[in-house]
Image 1 (cartoon, helix red, strand yellow):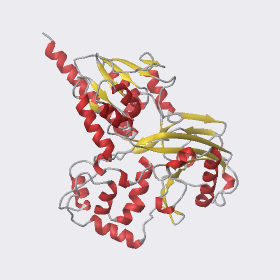
Image 2 (cartoon, rainbow, N blue to C red):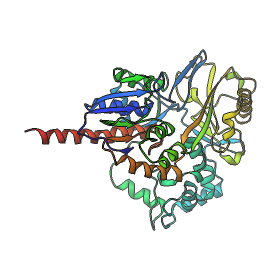
Image 3 (cartoon, rainbow, N blue to C red):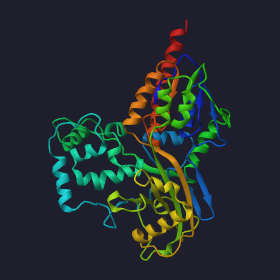
Image 4 (cartoon, rainbow, N blue to C red):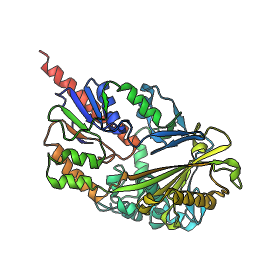
Length: 435
């Protein structure tokens, strides 16, 4: 989040009704602010949508999120029922040499990883990429086969494109200590926190959007195109970076607007595939999914095992739902592939990785040219400029997946923590003003 709410002003204008704008509006309304949300399109939720077909659900963006205790409280407030990953389907895989593996490292590489974890080292330099961080702290092989697939699954890019502690603010970087010693010391600092759990909703991610929309029905104005920043009251810009660039074009120097418009994003294609379970030579895949490192030279980034992980993903027990991810910065041209080429790449990959044979029953394709912001040097420098710009006007806030938290969990946590502080400041001001 860039900028701060002015607690002296009770009115808040939110521009954008994607998940960021809805969370901002919901939290501030709950805290007593007078909120109005403007959305340029006819629908709310932005990229986060759930579609339905005769064979089952498909998601246009994230299919789940990590939920901690604060998140559970939020969803309980909204009356939402959460679905956790099936206890028999918690395995996560990485492809190596064409085979799905829970641990993709060889015995020698795993031994080297353990050595690296217990070796004392100097802190790596500020601004190091995630690949540099990984090579320094856990070794090149572990970076290639553990970190790189993890990064690809979140950002659809390579670790070399991310600034390590900008993309992951809690990433450890101890000085003159080992990573193992760092984690051991952290465990002794206090009670162990409950690990976030991967969860989704009965009817897909749209349940969350609809629940927030229900709470904000009177505050949302759809098909309301804002061309500039309102001059009065608190303003939260919760749009994609390119739309934010247009809003500030006349209120800032041209350089900032252009930098904001040119923030790098990963392109992403998702293909939700419905197949009959009899089409697998052995058995349908069981687990959360499989990620594919670039070294495998695959046409795809990974596969999510939707109906294995969560209930209600398909309309029949005989139908298996999978989501295949393509594109990213490694194969950006995939966004331009015609449907027939995407279908061929999907079917070929299922045959090679999951021993699938035959044809899918249905393939639902979604394309996002600017899907995921890349937390690299360009974004970091632009946010520094934007922070200076926002601080020049009281009550101006930028809040989206490109302003510091790319994950849904991060956005939810930030909206809860930052706007709660605004409410405390507001109450303090009222008390001071009370004669």
